[in-house]
Image 1: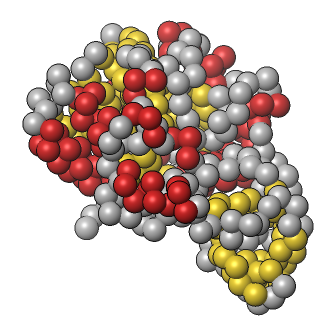
Image 2: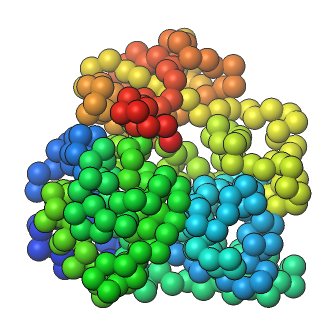
Image 3: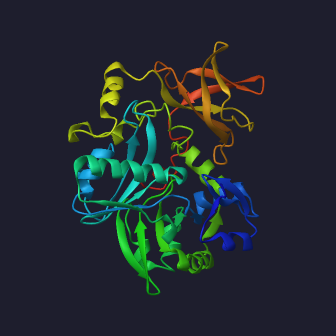
Length: 369
């Protein structure tokens, strides 16, 4: 299948971005300055990511709230219109995470459900199934092609965004608002995936290039998916297909807080209750190694020479200056345990450390992700 292209594809190519396939899309991995420079720019200044590959499913109608409550793990009644919430869609049979999702509550009976790139069709289908089972009056429409999404992230994100769209810069963390820029309607949410403060902006596809150029002109540097991945790894955030996906439940991924047990039935609740009562057979842990040699996905994690798990994500941390990794390990594994990672036949010492690896927002006086 031919990879889909962002509305900003021509803009990225004009900036000499390195384009790569990702989740069925062709997206920028990095720009000429490189991933390390883009990573540091996000930690110390402000960057803009094109995340148009994320899906948008518009769920609307009198039965929208009930449908989402029955489909997803978190409890939308904890928030109100004008807020965003992180949640999971589970497999009905084994409670593994079909997708992790941000929901924007944009109007009294209107929600924008934001799946991961390759999961939009499956999420749309699951929501339609739940609506049909409930007999709910609701529509679930994939509107991904109608907009681009720009993620402006970093400690100076709001300061620099205020030069372009002042109302957008005032949207608080996990709030959602409709604002106007040069007569164009934008949907802005105080969300992101870097561990830094920032906002995500949905802009009509035809207007995306103009907004992107205006942001760059205000000193917000373009950044690609390479930096987005190293940033989220330092922040200890899971990536679907690595720390979430088939065979992985929220409890194994230490994300039990997204499960609202008190709200009643939801998709996958029964098998998840079984695991909750028995206790997960493994849990996600952070590992730190010495030296610059990065751990990589799939490398065995060893205790006393025996394999006890495998790296799900690993890389060199530009902030810490050494290797970091995530791995599912036996539940008795605790912080401070000394393990090893088999890096191409060499046992590299690794210590279990708390997550996040880098608590950047907390150090700048903001609450961590």
